Image (cartoon, rainbow, N blue to C red):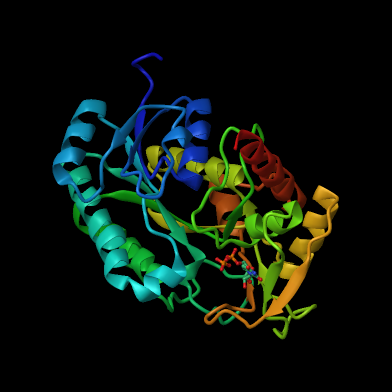
Length: 330
Ligand code: UDP
């Protein structure tokens, strides 16, 4: 690897979206330097650059890593991301996500690292008044996870105004799918996300999938979400990075496809892709679930040139290949 390639610090590079982005960064000519405390990430997902095992709250460790690698930018994924856990353990979320990000931004300032691409979320909007959701929708998160991400967006804006930080906040809708080469994929413990759970039911590794409410005001009564492939998200991060390096103005972008699917549509697509029946069980709605969350993706398209290439079935196909590979390894 030549020394002339610019280094990018990737916090949470051992996680789901961070690791896929490291692969995309290498393809784009960058050296991804992962910093991850491995509390939820996976050591074997770090395949495309060095791993520095440290917590973003550890200023001395950040000083050492930044002085050694001299990154041109930070891609900041490291966070705790379970909505339910954030409600029962808010202190954990504010310490790890908010205080951790402050520590990171202060270190960036000390080392003159002036560009940050931040992993934000559509959960910062809270229950939306209208759909599809554009970036100027008022942000009223309803749980500590969403609130923690919104606080970090605010911190970025304030650092920009006072210190000239350049930032892009990428508000993801529902990340899904796996690397098309099945080198990495989704591996949460516990798993709470719809597509991996439906795949487990298709594989017979769970008895059924719980449909969490079927009385919503949607076409079939189940919730609508905007599922975006993780490799598309990775591509959007590289685009946002280039945008900042080209002096793009700080702003937030929604990352979604603009198309929503109901829970029942996801289950039917899994049955088509896997060729297996998926047993379902009707269960009560999950508190706080919005009937429909769909992105207006036009800003990322016009400013970043970002257009998702993978559809729902592609996401399920790549996730299924990854799932089968994991089973084969066990
Ligand atoms: N969902 C479901 N059964 C499950 C898990 C999720 O019906 O076992 C539904 C959930 O109510 C939501 C959608 O699937 O409408 C996506 O949920 P997920 O947790 O994957 O993402 P979220 O949209 O909550 O971030």
